[in-house]
Structure formats: C-alpha cells, structure tokens
Image (tube, rainbow, N blue to C red; front, side, top):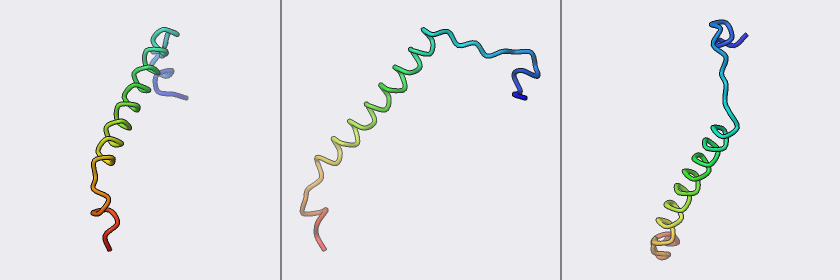
Length: 51
C-alpha cells in the first residue's frame, strides 16, 4: 500500500498540471540536448581522432 494512501493523503494531479509537468520536462530535456550538441559541434575533429 502506498505511503500517501496510508496517511489518507491522496495524490491528485489535474490534467492541466500533468500537461505543465510534461511540457516542462520536455523543455528541459530539449535544452540539455541542445546544449550538449552545441558543445560537441565546437570540438576540433583533430582532437577527437588523433591517435
């Protein structure tokens, strides 16, 4: 049995809150991937492939 149910504290998430959480999570993921892709694009290929 979940802890919140035992404490008589049901977790209620409205559809607009779920959409906001989803959009925020998606936005942060896109921002992080764009930032890392930008850093990778600036690397000199000679440094990456030197052996």
